[in-house]
Image 1 (spheres, rainbow, N blue to C red):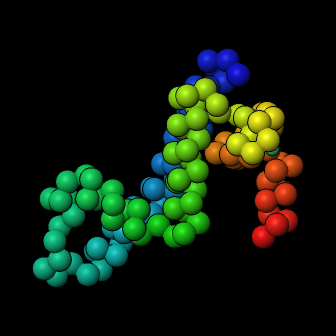
Image 2 (spheres, rainbow, N blue to C red):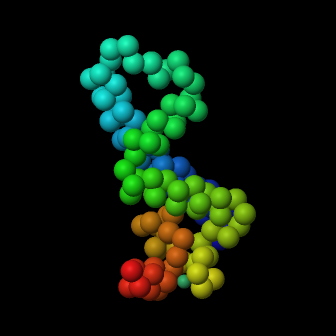
Length: 116
Ligand SMILES: [Zn+2]
């Protein structure tokens, strides 16, 4: 995978991350608007606490996706991105195009799901 592909997938991953967090942030703001009576204003709490609140408001599936995306971003950095975390074979560009955070090739993914 050359540097251009790495950058392309990095942008893809960041966009997905933003989409998941953005949707959740919207829910959170709506919830705040609803119960705004003496509750601490999150805007004053600093972005770390705010981000934590956003994460807490995520569903289990969304949290798992964020973890997978962060993991994929880490692998992009250390150069193991696109390699199956189970068998070491390439995950495949086509699969990464659909699911850029995928840690496993389709064969291992199917195997993992079959075991469950
Ligand atoms: Zn594999």
